[in-house]
Image 1 (cartoon, rainbow, N blue to C red):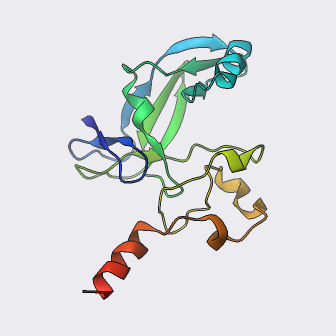
Image 2: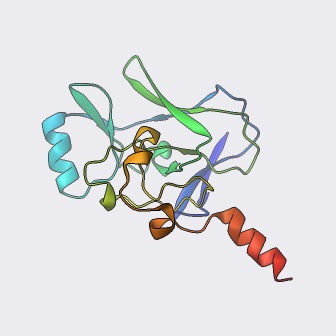
Length: 161
């Protein structure tokens, strides 16, 4: 159903290998269940694959066997995260075509948001990996920090032909 490949905006990504229907649980985010204290220690050491599970624990998905770790952030995502019975799932938000890169909004808050720039290229890109509820709180204009959208790049290239 899925395969890892070169991302259009972030190194490697996870792609639909065949069409996937909206609402499908695509892949579970797997890894070691760790305490919040251990999570803080690993984050401080540079681990970028820690995922919030609940009030007491997180999942460390750094293992290469965790295919879900390749799902990149987008400000215009095609997937969402569902947490159910102690498992984290990547779920299709809409019908996906074969070859389409999977993405979800990482949903960070405003604390240290500048450390998490976004390069998704979506027309509505806010410039950072922020939860949508925080987009209006960014103190600079979009043009000051946002990458050109992939659509705008394509439009510019076609107008030059």
